[in-house]
Length: 515
Image (tube, rainbow, N blue to C red; front, side, top):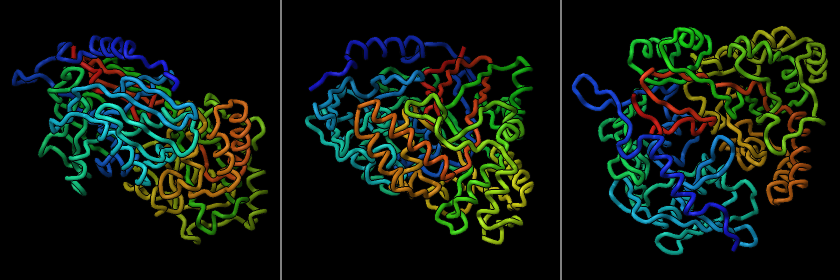
């Protein structure tokens, strides 16, 4: 067995530092509200979370909540390093297929039960059966508790970036999850610093959390959290300015600039590992026409879209990652930079020399209403019209669920990436259809190359496989990649908030405190 460098000594140092910096365990002052009670925090959530079950969706809004309620074995830090969280350490078998994690004793779930290795095994064994989260655990064969505080997670294939995946598997309480059944969609028990407030959950309006008194690192200094659902960007800004919200991710960059310039608030910009893109449903006959997909890619002026939709706070995207990701190599890939002449040539090659109306094929472009996705859709609609392609726009509040089921023709979406190209299998490998391969894209060579690159630790072999994937996927155009964005945040001057370079894990409220 090869001992990794996640030693218990480092864990202790990290936890002590976390307690000191975050005000955990009651440290760090905060103002009282009008009744003299310690002050909670109220946050904006841009869409309705589809479920609170951590294994049945990967919607960002659900993750915002889970990050406070559940914990994972490890964390991926902003610099890409892996640090232990629920696990105190791990070892890896010589063949690289068995990860053995050790757990601390005395960690409590919100229902008072102690965390055991059987809970971790149950969590992973449940996750591998759920299509929505399959992209995080597809490489796991099974998990097995060796004793109360030791668990083996056995892989079905060598996967060099597996720990980055494990950072996205929330650990649930086996007893509670089994007993709750379908009710788990609106409830749940974790080991995190916050727990759901009984009677305080309405997925359509707000979700209320209270600090967990028996949290293993000490009770959070902020005693309560309220996530308020608001799908209208303008009204959300008003709520923030009038004090109804303490922290918000600003969905419309044009709203961010006056808030930043006012000097009344704390603000921050975080470059996110995120891609905004259009998704063709590649199972539709009209979008099985590769030349048409290529034409529609050539017809999009991404720089202009970024200015119109995101105030220039982004960079043009070529696929579902940027060139900072290990293994990404666009040097041999087709250049689909804005080119009207090439777009028209490809449109003629596709069989539409005089243009087409996508409505004649039942296609409409759906988008998240009230967000920058709406502006992206509007900009693209105008650009496609310049080459003779008409498309109808439609707002939707069910983009995330429709993306998974394939209940769409053409949509706007957003997706995260990590520091390792292997992660992109979630978007391009055919086994992730009905999960995170929203485009329902199938290419046997791409499947084969991902299997090759993801089954070795040889960096040269991996890079060669991923380079070929870049060339094939970019030329196939299953999507129209638009931008990698910067995320603007704004929060109360008296709130010490920490924002992270992550989409799934943008903040942990346990790290926050009030002045």
